[in-house]
Length: 114
Length: 107
Image (cartoon, rainbow over all chains, first blue to last red):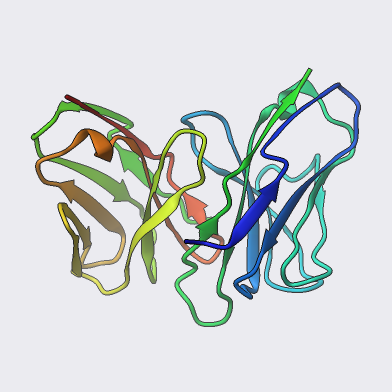
């Protein structure tokens, strides 16, 4: 079983609020990822990181930021939440270096913005 | 960006039937992964294929990587209701996912 955790699992907030979604992994993985997924739909890469102090933008990154100060922690911040941000947010991690990028996913955070 | 196209998008079958879903690209991949996702949960890795022409079996699931390493297939024999879920393929250094095949196995 993968040791990757996301909190909160569910979040309902009002428009304009600043929120941070937490993701932690205890596997010592170098690479971490954030995806956004609407129910039953494809995963969209938001941000990823190759290691500490490394962050890269994905396809839907313009309205969020991430940080990677510690290997095990990769939080995602929405500065001003909007109803269009309502979705499921999935965090994942994988080994770095020469690897096949096999990802281990957290259980997700389901965000609803009213 | 290396794009992955999955087909069919939706598949509904009766328990006991066989099925095959596909993951295709115009790009060459060093490896491809297959994941299965249940509603409300994160995807779970099923298998990684690495070598062109490779075939891997996981109980009733058979995964094949194309000779040119541009495509892959997943074949399920005698599907069960527990196989219901979203099947995703992924690959490439930037870890893009296909849109997935949503499989429903009816009792």
